[in-house]
Image 1 (cartoon, rainbow, N blue to C red):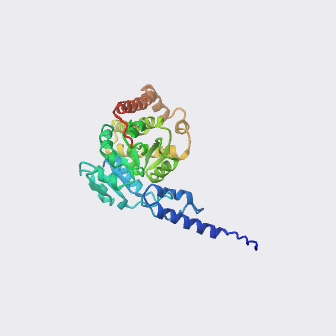
Image 2: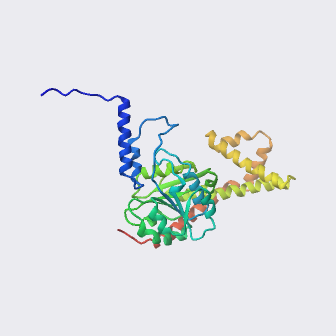
Image 3: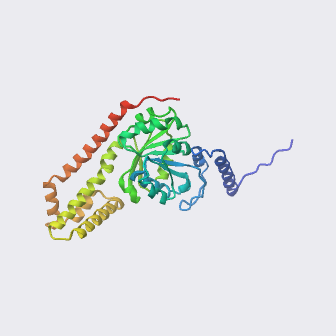
Length: 337
């Protein structure tokens, strides 16, 4: 028997074969969730110009408030390697009232009053309602949740254990805590995976949310802390900005101008803090000159206890988030399929 001639593929032929395999995988797994297997067939490309990939991932939002709207805006800009472009036709929002539907419709997103209809037609569902409504909502949709679904809760304080107890046993569940600046795509978001969620599920969510702002993944214990730090912290910053402006008004500046300058001051300081990589104390010291205006002002703030008050505010908000979690836990009943 004649010896078989060995043939070695060059790089172009290898990449072509991987492309074929990837396309076959897409055709086979267009049920929304398994399309994420695209990650198995990544081809080395220029990171600035990732390959275009079709996606049948359908995304739903139960709740039409600010968090849902901010996240929806970011998702529609995602264009990520794993998820592909998400067209508005693949996104749907449900709410009992049509009051907030207009701004979603302006994005090209479909709306409905039926949570069951939304879940049945979507693969990844954000539960973006108030914490006390979560039990009712999940009880309503549980019969429509299948193993292909990914459920993402945006409700403060409601634990993964509670969420998983209210849904079918094999449901993929994640917790996500965004904050109000998601509305302008400058949010700070932290997510945590449930016991059934894989690393790929976290990667998918991070990719979808990349235009919402800073997105990080961490253990669930950090979610409540993040709520106190960033979710509630936005209000603390607004209070500080208001006080800055009122100080200027007291000294004779027109109110409108004072508030405009205060807003720009907070924005500029935050961007410099984020982009410089320096510790806040280092940046603060760079503003202070010996015997200057800033050190006198800082002394007054320290006398007023602003540092301790802020730390206590974060601590108190965090404990409140934990309390909400404890209150929601007893309502969870196992619903296994």
